[in-house]
Length: 266
Image 1 (tube, rainbow, N blue to C red):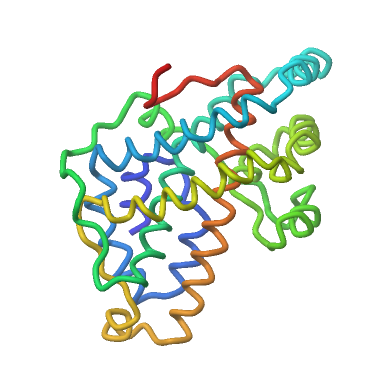
Image 2: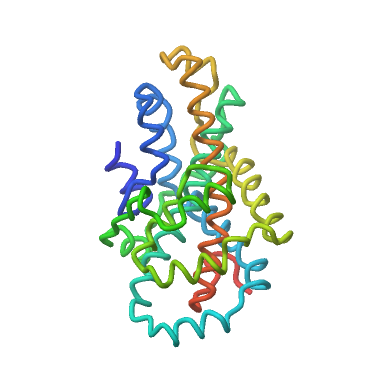
């Protein structure tokens, strides 16, 4: 299961949300694998990259490029290429996860969801192949510098994989947290983050292959009501965080001079 997910997402590590979902054996065996054929289509990755493109404009209007330039010069930051490589991983992984979790969430509300998308095989780009081979170790969540601040601002105990991925660059972490901790308070950022969330939910019907995962189907597959409630809570909390962290990743990349669009060309 883990190997399949890493290969399909072309990512070097398993997103933390899967570890939570894997606590429910029958759900992991009966529901999650239904997503795999759709993830392996070109339409799926195109949709994910479109989500990235959607996040660019409101962030470009807010991010202070001069402050980033000053930081990079004054801090004599020597790990720029490595940091950009890590952000590239999240640039591809996070919108895919938003689509995946949205489909699982929507599956609870329909007898069957998806089946309307094209079934063209996915072609992995050079960037995706490079991401898969990168040796990325996430920082220990319990030792994360801003653990309490995340809980206060986002009202969750989740520390996003994105921040655990960049935490080894302590000077950059301190700088970027100062820049982005209140990003969600900007109306246009909040509006676009919600837009990504609802776009991903509506995209579930365009998965190439149908997914079954409503309460009735779950109960038939020995996933009881308590598990269903726990799974829905896991999905909802991570969906909320992914929709915000896509904006954060975009802001980080723009600050480092990486603002190219992957689907929508100006």
